[in-house]
Length: 102
Image (cartoon, rainbow, N blue to C red; front, side, top):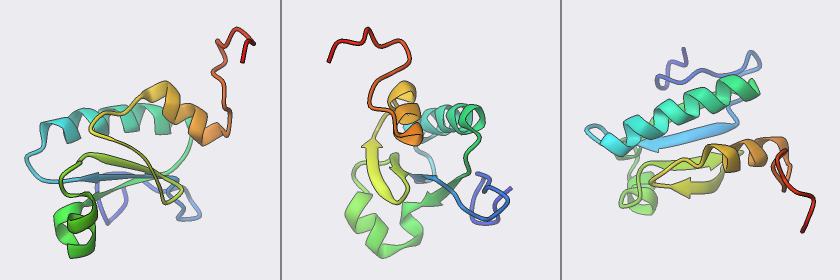
């Protein structure tokens, strides 16, 4: 476990996914479950940060939690779209199930 939150980090300390949450947020609980699934399947590190622990984070993201960041960039908020998150982590624009049509 990562001492900064309930997520874990890869052995080199890198967390590709950051989940911004706050205490008492039911959407955050659902998002956490999705992040745990995707991070485990894709074998990437993740961490969770309480937005209320940092005034800058609370100001920037506080009205949109949960917020998912991938490699430090905002990926989405309120809900985690698992397939979209997988594509962002693998750098793939199209899902494996894509028809090939663009």
